[in-house]
Image (cartoon, rainbow, N blue to C red; front, side, top):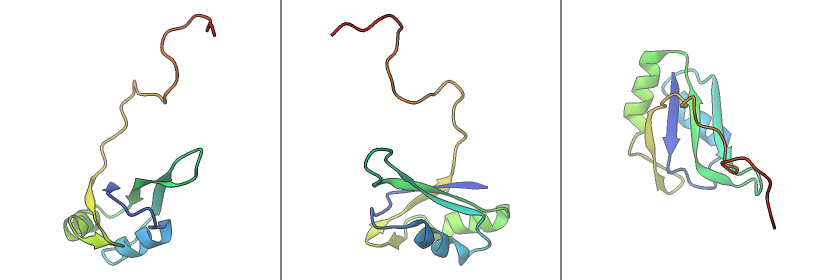
Length: 97
């Protein structure tokens, strides 16, 4: 199960995230999402756990709990929508400056 973890402190590392969730079961991956340009955390991440029951237990156990001074927002991650792509300009045509 893929789990969304929001409202992360900018100091939280992937290792911190993994340790918080390992209390509930085996963590396959823990990823803090970072800005491509600055490398700074965007304040959210994802944790993947193979055991659905343990993942649900982790969601229930960590949602609303504090980690490094911030109250976590934890829930099952929604799948990415197909039509969504990164930023960039909409509409073709040459640019004029």
